Length: 128
Image (cartoon, rainbow, N blue to C red; front, top):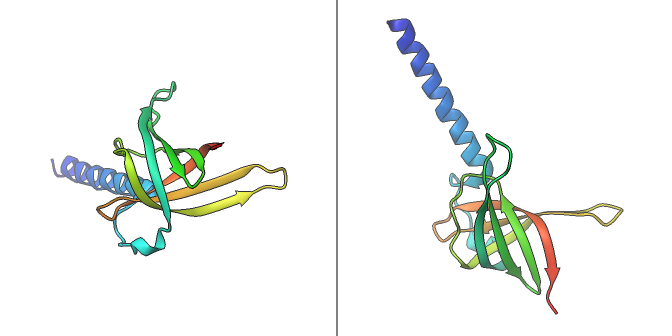
C-alpha cells in the first residue's frame, strides 16, 4: 500500500511541475514588471481561439491587433482564454530579419493585473 501511495505522490508532484513549467513558458506571473517598460499601445480588435486538426495539440489564441499604422495577427499557443477587446501595453521582445527579408517578431503584452504573455507575429498588413 505504501508503494502505491509513494508512486501516486511522485506522479502528482511531477504533473504539477510540468503544468507550472508550461504556464511559465506562455505567461510570466512570478515577476512584476514596470509598465513603463512597455512603450507600445496594442489595440486588440479581435480575439479568438483556433483548434488544430491534429489530436492532442493545444488550441491557440489568435489576436487581430493594431500597433501604430499596422494591422498584425498574433498567436499564443498556451492555455490562455480569450483576451477582451481593448488597449494593452506591449513591447517588441524579439525582432529578427533574415538576409532574404523574412521577419520573425515576438511581442509581449501586459495585462492589467501585471501578467504578461508572449505572442508570435504570424500576419501583417499595412493600413492605407
